[in-house]
Amino acid sequence: MAKADGMSAAPVLEVRGLSKAFGGVRAVDDVHFAVSSGELLAMIGPNGAGKSTCFNMLNGQLRPDAGTVMLERRSIVGLPPRQIWRLGVGRTFQITATFVSMTVRENVQMALISHHRRLGSLLPRASSLHVAEADALLERVAMRDQAERVCGVLAYGDLKRVELAVALANEPRLLLMDEPTAGMAPKERIQLMELTARLARERGIAVLFTEHDMDVVFGHADRVIVLDRGRLIAEGTPAEVRADPQVQAVYLGTGAMYGHDA
Ligand SMILES: Nc1ncnc2c1ncn2[C@@H]1O[C@H](COP(=O)(O)OP(=O)(O)O)[C@@H](O)[C@H]1O
Ligand SMILES: [Mg+2]
Image (cartoon, rainbow, N blue to C red; front, side, top):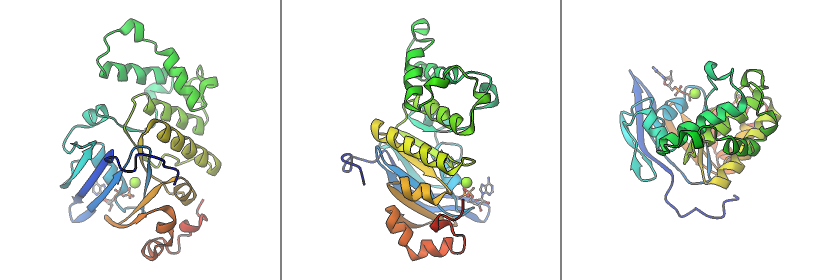
């Protein structure tokens, strides 16, 4: 894989023994994995495998029953979502109804203002607009030319790139993307993940993402982990995971491993 350095550095995120049950259902059962700076790790598995439950434990929305979650060697288990975000765990989220009436640039400015406030910057006038910084981020996601448009009128794929710029404004160390390309056309999915990979490598961001489109998974992940009914059943390079009989059995008959599902 195209990772020149950072291989020996401590992982940005290290998860061990992560578990969560809902009543009798072991939604996540003794899961472990790690993600390094600049690396894209895909978490895959059929519906109900426990992917979203994992994500919600990483971002603080759910408290694990057991396990450790270390963000750059610091435990984040039990911290509220806001604090986990402050420590550098970003996620892509839908731009909320309140923000669709604002322009593309304003959305990124809002994110930058909140980020600089977090860093303790008390220069509201000097920093209140962050126009140049916002436009630089928009340039990186190829949305500079649409900076003045209202988010509500954007094409879906364009909105996703704005969401990425909003997430980057917080300078995350780890980016969590739960089905980032849902609802996008195949060509747009590839483009969004190419952009994400480029930015992650450039900025040394660790990325954990879930994805149904196997072309996206096998084309863009550095490594893949596979969950089935809460258990980690495989881990490896895209090629290794694709060739794994247990993984093939889980996806048997779905056509998903062969890119026929879209
Ligand atoms: N809040 C909840 N209450 C009860 N059961 C839940 C809850 N969230 C998830 N589950 C169950 O946990 C399992 C894993 O779900 P989920 O993490 O959403 O899987 P995935 O994202 O891989 O589709 C499923 O059996 C699901 O029904
Ligand atoms: Mg899910």
